[in-house]
Image (cartoon, rainbow, N blue to C red):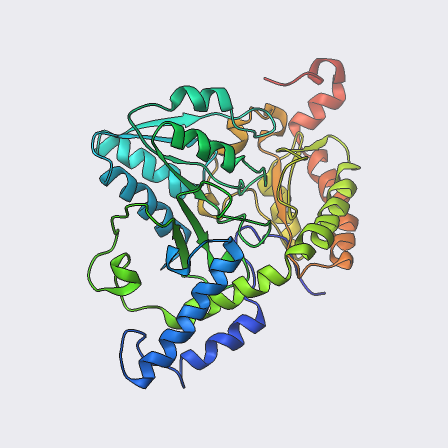
Length: 399
């Protein structure tokens, strides 16, 4: 039976139409986009169209606000390092406790090596940002705020428009890691006060190894990679033309499928989620009223999430326990810890992330298989056995 892929927040399958668009730029149209002869000018025109496709998807005012990069991590690093380098005595960074490692690892490095003060803003039990703590952290030394648009583990959406406005009132720049949001929910950068935004191609059915950084016109930008004149001198190196073309096509397709993401994919997620909750002793983590339409993070009590994933994989179902960048770690998710998820469920959370390629038949097959997996694992769980023996004593178990 065909495997079922429910790990689209880790990466998506490259759309065949994207691959088709890319192929000529490996062979027939192989010129360097910076060359002035016909081989280069034909390619540079295609690169410009890809940039315009991203501009349209993001609602950016100008196509030159889009800088092509190698992906979300490079874009995140470039945005934060540029802001810290270009704002004089402002040497403080504000971010959240639930950011992707691309932000948190850089923040930790900056604290240790550059004496940058980092404020990590907490979240509540539904993954919503502590706005009051955020406002208290803002001040005359804040150089940049970096808050994700959508959490990669729970799908919880953050009020980036409001947060950007508050950052600007304090004289700070605002960056958002929108890797999970772009292509799944509408974004209008002409309306939002976002200064910089990161995205990655492989999260929206584009190729891996390509991404972009939006830098609003008028924002001073210091390049992370220096050398040639590419990307208006903001990101040197010969353009990865095939992947840029692929990202542009993926952006075009994402715009065309946006309503499907909200309706059909959202309904599939709800169908999957409601069926799994019937198993009992499990709950949805994150803000179930304000999240991505494709993402469900469910915490199963008294069992281990890695064990659940192992048995799912044996049945041909792919899912994850959180960020692919931290998979293999035995530590519970930093996102769920920040949300103060109860101990009895902290290790039992799994993330199910769908895409426009998933079907009702796949969801129903998962719902047929999962109850048996959970029952089997609870039968050998010491925590479950203890609860069965003394349910009153174990009932609270929220330490």
